[in-house]
Length: 430
Image 1 (cartoon, rainbow, N blue to C red):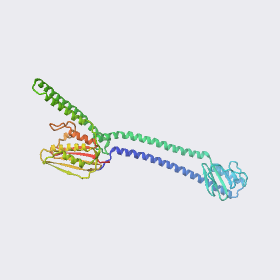
Image 2: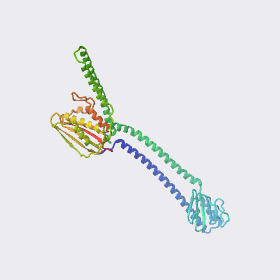
Image 3: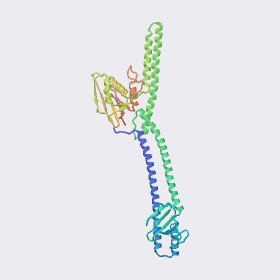
Image 4: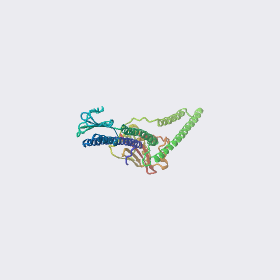
């Protein structure tokens, strides 16, 4: 048997994967945005270096002042420059696009705008937002370039709005994902939890339809069980009250002793006590339990006649389960007693204990009289008994104990061939 993960656990995994994918997409978008911005900045720096090289070429080419002024004006317009200044190493302006005063060797000083961390070294470009300062070696000049603010502001706004869009998209998608996962899987989780409470094995390929139908069938059985329970109580109490009334009349006439009435009342009290014991919630003392040891203890409690042989199969080092040792011993003891009572003559009981995936599976099979197929659905119902003096609470109590441990129990039987009860409990730590 292949190990199956529980459906709620799968739903949780799907939700985590969905959220991780959302975060991954957001991180990729941010990375692309920053790469795009870096590429833009790099492209801008490349343009400034190209402008600086053109300015150097103009200065080295021997143009007169008017020609240089016209060339620098055309350069400023071609590259959409806000401000272009060329100054010698002493700070004397060679050209200023704002004043168009471009006479080599002029005494007009140019004060470089503050904010640059340092003066660049030879053939180095430094930047402060939209302003660039380059130092040329040949000729030895400083080239100051300021880009049109609107141009950089537009890109900056685009970048900021892009980041804002990604953030809002991430928040919205995350909220939408959480909302969809919660509302899409909440009914499935409810059905899965209900199925686990009923001890129904959930199959992934047809989870919704098969599991829901099985849960519906179990609910109908419980409804039928409640009707039978009510009918049984009414029947038993009516019989007891009828007997008490009859005995009271006989006692009144002196034909019966009063002790007979007391005896019948005690029978009613015993019935009520057993019903209350079955109805009250179980209080589990959860510890690590090894089913091999529980089996040993249960077999000691059941006195098997020599006509019945017992065969045990399975490894002795079965992993532990979490459970109540005493209640599990009571459940297995009841199953062994049933197996013993089902074998009228010579026969055998086979006990198998093993692992199937993440479950420890216990099987108790007998070679007794078996059960009719139509009775299999009712065999775990309270007050259903094929014994004349039975109350029908034994197997119902066993099923209750198994399901309280988060396990499942099923029965297979053939009339005249025997019956097998199969119990499955999740391995400790799973």
